[in-house]
Each structure stands twice: as C-alpha cells, then as structure tokens.
Length: 82
Image 1 (cartoon, rainbow, N blue to C red):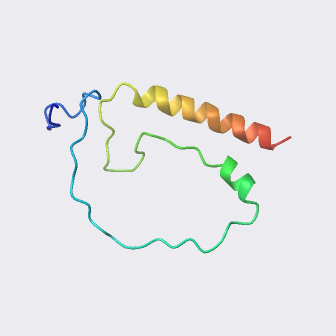
Image 2 (image 1 turned 180 degrees about the vertical axis):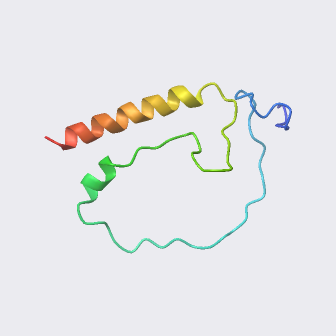
Image 3 (image 1 turned 180 degrees about the horizontal axis):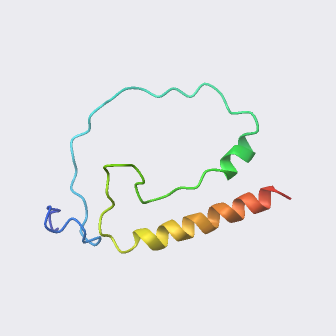
C-alpha cells in the first residue's frame, strides 16, 4: 500500500496508515434532548472544515459531498415540517 505523505495528501485514493490514539477525556451522555427528532432534523453534516485557521484539503469530492449533505438536510427538515 502507498504511504500517505505531505506530497500526496490530496490524493483521495491513498489510504491513511494507522496512527497512535491520544485520549483527551470522556464524553458522557446522560439523557435525550426534549424534542430529539426535531433537533436531529436541524443537524447537517459538512465535510468541509469551516473553522478559522483550518483549511480543507484539495480533495475534489469535498464540494459535491457538502452540497449533497445540504440537500439531504433540507429534505429532512421539510419532511419534519409536515
């Protein structure tokens, strides 16, 4: 298998090698949100990092994926409005 390097970071066909895991803490879920179904309809996954200082890779599939996830989220919201 090809190794992922900084030179080929944007080649989406190359698999990531295993990396060491770092434990940063524990997340504990203690309850379900009131009106959980409606809240879930507001969540839309975005594969593009939209945080200052973090740039997306040059992966050509990021923009189409983001568009498809947005359409899916809008459909879920519309279905919940019935």
